[in-house]
Length: 370
Image 1: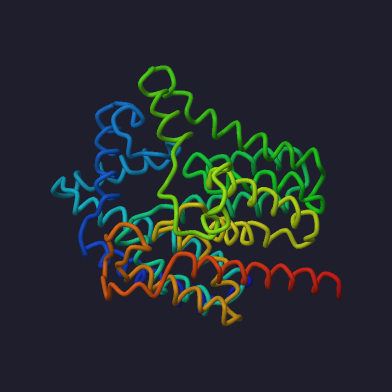
Image 2 (image 1 turned 180 degrees about the vertical axis):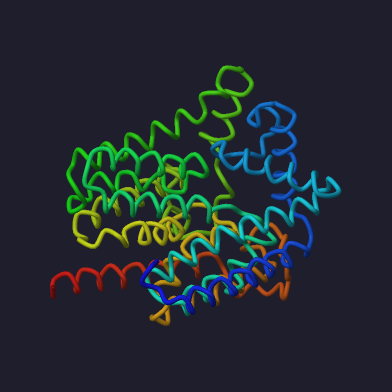
């Protein structure tokens, strides 16, 4: 950060403050199903109960549950204890996370792209109205990956693995990224990659340890976390699998995503972009889609904004976030502009597939030239 001019830093600080305000304003559009879930989760934690036995609505590692409890405590300590007020606090927190991701973008590229990440409507709506926390898991995961890449010792690998495990214990977005890492032959030594992955998995598994003593809580982890399946259908994987009932869509998604990573990770020297490629592939191949998933690859899309395809994805995602139709599942949107069915998740996914292929080819060509 020392090589970034002070004036640029000040501009981004101002932009960050404004962007947080926009997310809070977005949250004022009303509460939704997910917000009701976060209210129940925070209530369970603050009452001293296991979140996995008190509600079926929580399908993730425990980190986010404790953050929700802390935000609920802060909200109720400074004013009325209402779900609407908590919504504003969560939106502000997720806005801060988006600001941290914007600093990551600026370090890698420019303040223009950092501002694009902060002010694009997808980030504003998903962090503000939808209050989805994929950005937190992504931020922690990217920081862990960078720490692993610059590490030189076994201790560095363990530290990076602990941080990556914290990402998984927040939300297991990067879970299928682990086989990509194992086969990334140009990234450090094999034993270091294995240590990084094994440490990450240990942290993820151990994060549930306090909750498995109670039988009801253990059953909740099994049923609502490990066996959880989101809304399936309206995806590329469903279209590929439409003529076969022998392989569940979720299984095909895991096979395709893991296999793709094993193939490309062995061929890319610039491993810094590997998690960005993963986030694109994760969304493009997902067997179930929801509006908030459209923000998952956004940091990659912004960093690759030099191509018209990236802008096309932003437009398609924005239309999906403001459209109510049968192809997009639930009708909870902050700004319902139209009910025309001209946009689908498959269209957004296809744009990501093409963007992924183009970026992979560009990386390979630049590496051959160098």
